[in-house]
Every structure is written in C-alpha cells, then in structure tokens.
Length: 255
Image (cartoon, rainbow, N blue to C red):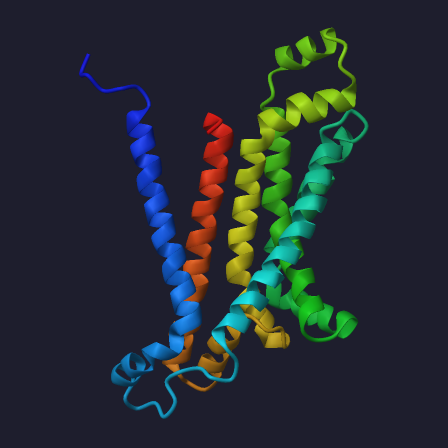
C-alpha cells in the first residue's frame, strides 16, 4: 500500500476542476461587462482602425440574447430528441428507428445557412428562423445518445424490475432513464456546444447574438470586432462544456 486514501485523487481533481471553472466564469463575466476597458489594448493592437471596439450594442445584451437563442433551441431539441429516442426504443416504435435517425442526420448535415434561407420567407427575420435552424442542427446527438443510453440498460436489470411487479412507466422512470442519463446528458452536451457556435450565424438574418460583432467585423474588415465576438463565444462554449462535464460526473459517480 502506498498510503493514499481512496478517493483523495478524485477529490483533488474535482477541486482543481472547480477552481478552473470558477476562474473561467469570472473571466467570462468580466469580459462581458468590461470589454470597453480593453479599448486601449485593441487600439494598440489595431492602430489602423478608427473604431477598434464594438459599440453598436452592449456585450451584455449580446451575451443574454445569445444565451436565449441557445436555451430555447436546445430545450426544443432535448424535448423532441428525447421523446423521439424513447418512442423508437419502445416495442411500438422500434420499426421507426431507422427513419427517425435518418431524418435527424439530414437535419444536422443540412447547412444552417441553407435552413435560414428557407426559414426566412416562412418565419421572417430574426429570432424565429434562427431557432428553427439551431433546433434542427441540435437534434441528432440528443436522439442518438438517448437511443444508445437506453440500449445500455442490461436486460437482466429490466427483467428483475418486471419480476418485482413494476409497470412499464415505472421501469422507464426508475430504472431505464436513471441508468441512461449519463449518456443522454453527453448527447445534450454535444448539442448545446454545437448550438453555441452555430447561433452566431443567426446575426446574418437579423437575430441579435454574439455573432453580431463577428458579422460586422467581417463585413467591415474590422478584425478587432471579430476577436471580441469570437472570444466571448469561445469562453461561453468552454464554460458550458465544463458545467456539463460536472453534470455527467455526478451521474457517473453519484457525487
């Protein structure tokens, strides 16, 4: 024996992870609220730009709008994706699994810009077409991981539950979903992270997001705007990914 107390390395790793996550959250909030304080830095880096700091809207408003787009689209993707995954893993819906998986795959492989081009004439500019594009783009990992997670539940466990007199709904809620939850959350994690990055293109059809300074920078050849938007999008994605990592670990270890 080396004298190491069981569980201590994992606790130390968790503490280090919490510290890293906390530091990134502080940095994200600081940049969102205080990007204007970095104007001297951007002026020094880009002396040829007359206006190196994006000022058409506050970064706080852009951040909140971006998070709103991701939350709404991800919620719809999760509800529809988990429901579809549950349906095709039940006896009544198993024959539809290839069709559902294929439709979800088509939704993700179809370029979001093309979805926006189709949705704008139907839903108008701004929020609605962006939500449609993000929802379709986020469905596949949720559906796939729901099916995969439910498929990992041992048949012996299901038989034991039935032997104890549990109904189909009780088995689903008390046995299948808890055992599959880690895999399902992994799919939701992928979906949300994809949508954080993809939501930026919503600004091309008038949706307010962190893509607004990105698009303005690309159109106006202003690299400073692009860096400011990309920095916040990247940090938001990293922080969200670490939060989901903790949630997955909770279901893996029961922390």
